[in-house]
Image (cartoon, rainbow, N blue to C red):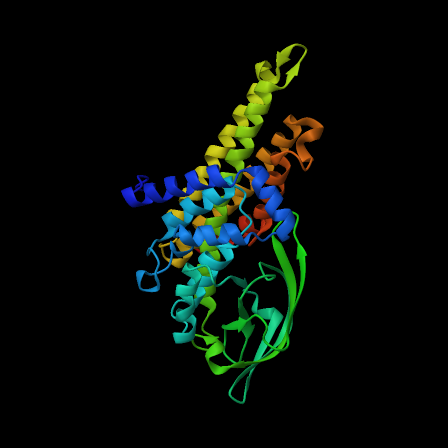
Length: 362
């Protein structure tokens, strides 16, 4: 495997890192998120202007034509800055589902790059039923905890149809019969429960009826890989903050960092972080592998990330003492995000079970 970045990839990483460190420190983030209930329009515009929202889009749509490595680089830096904006939902998941979904869907790709479109998705077809109707389709059902639904301009949802597999539909926000009950998650991201009882035009169907299963599986694995990369940024920030705190905080006239037992604890945290980095690379570099190999690599990586998130997060909070979970310190906010990542798109236990099933099948 080649772990060297190209010149363009290194420039992308350095540009985004510099912007976030100079313009989006923790205090700025906390102030904006509290006012916008998890949404930061100014940051979203800035990401569009920097080309970040188009990093995975084809050049014909105004994008950079990037792939899994670019998604990994961006996701890790967004995790390090604890960005709550829906890059994962819109660019990693939404844009991938829209590609090849017809003229209407592909026209939205350029709008994603410009920041005009935000996408939320639900890829559990059991929650929705779609039936042919005059001039299109009728979609009916309820969706729970759709991340990014408040403020989304479009939804991409999976539904049951007459075919053997799920179908994908594009639903515009504001469509009659679509309602969103909004709330904020513990990691400050906006989410909502969506009720749908709506008539959709024929071109709302993305692809062929009942044929979306392979695309959904591939996109979910890409999302898991991006989450693994984001977790690396989150965990690295928690470790760095813990080491710095241990150097400054004094007990018995000595900095905490001078106590050997705590040094050993922080070394163990560093080892867990390095395992998380390797897991992220494993998932990213196998996204182009055959489906079975891709699924095994991603499941193993997500399980590893989940264990690292719990170990580093719990120790970071503990070493900060009672202050670890206060709103004033960043470490508690990062721990909440790490906890959500560990449970997203399959918990650690679910990924272990998935890996075991794939190995038995192999």
